[in-house]
Length: 506
Ligand code: HEC
Image (cartoon, rainbow, N blue to C red; front, side, top):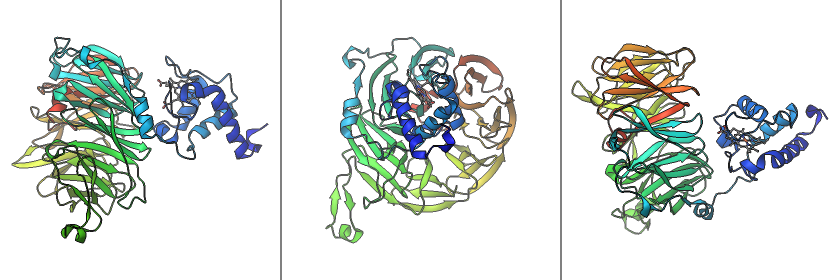
């Protein structure tokens, strides 16, 4: 029968049957994933439908994903792909019991050596996330050579987070898996599935508390350092009426807390991971002043800052007393986390990517600079007055901006520009001007720079399936080396992350 003449309902029924017959063994009976990734609209958001069609038709080479072009007709495949991009109703649940039951202990921590099993400087290692075939490479930042490579969960998200002076690192995957990795022993220690669709993870410096921001379900999950569940907090507004996705969670060391951004409710949350903290008043302020209101413990409960706009993308001042956030419309504002309200508007246009922000001292002032996802500029802001000091024109809208305290240069990409995504530009942090362009091959993205511990070399990603990490001398800006990698979407230097180096995001 011709698909176009079939009622939509019959098509969906067919698709569901095809799914059960051909896909469920690997992608899970309920589409929540298994050996293959979850097939839900939230999880597929980054894959264009045309690509999904091709994957189902032709399979994905060198993976377990098989081709179905011979098994099903083109119309059946189209209907099936439509179906996996439509929501599961009712929405799938992932309860505290599911989280607990998912935990895997890969090695007994008692068997792990308490010093590095290699002779490289453990603080100058890089982790390179290779999205092409879901692996992580460990690079020795002195010799600029890989020392290890291991398989990761499907589609790691948001950058790994380091703890205990860089010995442990925590990864979050799009499908909700949190992995604890021992970088001294080069071993996965434990894993847990904290959600169905996850944005990112944050970890306290002592490695004892881990927070997970979920889109699905609408929860913020708190784990201990061994990935045991502490609690799952339902993300709703203060009245418990409107529920929200959690777009990101950050760790604020000076405050001993996690800061969470909600996607659908105009609130920012602060969750203390220390017990030495005041209780949180709930209910009305006049009750609180009279000491009559109700209180909940401050430890591991959200302290809410209510805002007018939903804020998405954050940058924190060095002491974490203030955050800069951007709303979906690109409007910027400054929120003070102590008085818990907006203290200034930011004169920003386009879609500033505050999460890429870096800071440095410029003519006696502390400045912050970030890229813009919609405008071809790097914006430099005075952190004392919140004024825009300079708009530095770039070749196109960019995603990452990176520098190092020891370098006079900052590197910016033009990743969001189809014509110029192969160009890196080098900004002089003193003159605030572009002083050099590093052009790769047109059409092949060159982006995401990270410096070595001492700031001597800058490593960039040739962001392609047959890509590479390209090493530049950070003074001469000449290429010194190229290490082949499978779509290296991010690289993270242990020292720069652990020390919260001013030239990189955290
Ligand atoms: C034998 C196991 C297996 C079967 C059967 C299978 N898949 Fe997959 N599928 C995988 C694996 C593994 C991946 C991840 C491949 C990779 O590493 O990128 C995948 C990836 C995918 C992706 C890309 C997801 C993404 O986020 O990149 C889609 C879409 C997909 N499968 C759909 C299907 C559909 C529809 C069916 C049934 C017709 C199916 N798969 C059957 C194992 C399987």
